[in-house]
Image 1 (spheres, helix red, strand yellow):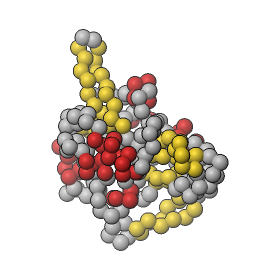
Image 2 (cartoon, one colour):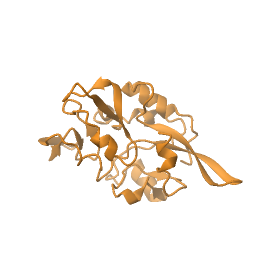
Image 3 (cartoon, one colour):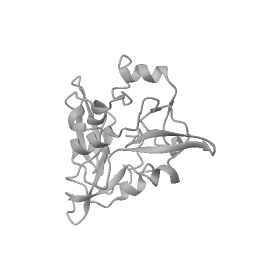
Length: 212
C-alpha cells in the first residue's frame, strides 16, 4: 500500500481480462481514511478475494463433493474434494460454474464481500439462478506461468504475486523484509492475500463492505 497510487489500473485490467460486467467487481481499489479529524490521512487499499487457507465460503456449498486431482508444476499430483466452490491444493479458491447451482450461500458466508451474483451468467447446475463471480487470480494465466492481469498492469509495482513456498521468489523475499497484515484476521480464515502498510487493524466492517 506504500506503493499504491490509487490509479485503479488493476480494476480496469481485471474487468478487461475477465469480462467483468458493469456494476460488479472482482477487485476494487477503495479510498480509506485513518485517524480522527483534523489528524487524518487518506490511503488506498485494493480489495480482492483473500484466497484463504481456511475459506469460509467452501463448507456452506451444498453441491456434493467429487474427487479431483491437481498436478503441480513439478509434475507431482494431489487429490482433493471439489464442490462447486473449492480450494485447489495450490491454494487458489475457485468456482466451478458447471456445477454451481447459484444458491449464493458462499456469497453470504464470505466475510470479505469478495463474491457476487453474476448479473448475466447463469449457473450451470441450475440455469434458473445466476452464477457466482469472484477473483480467481486469473487462474487461466497463472496455470500458464503468467502473472495475473492486475499485477502485470500495476504501474507502481504495488502488486506482487508468486509462490510463498519458494524462499527465492520475490514475494517470499518481500514478506521477509516487511511487516504484513491481512484483512480481519479474527475471522479465522487465514487470508493469503497480504498487505504491506495496512494502517487499520480491520476496516472490513461498515467501512469497506459499504464500498465494495
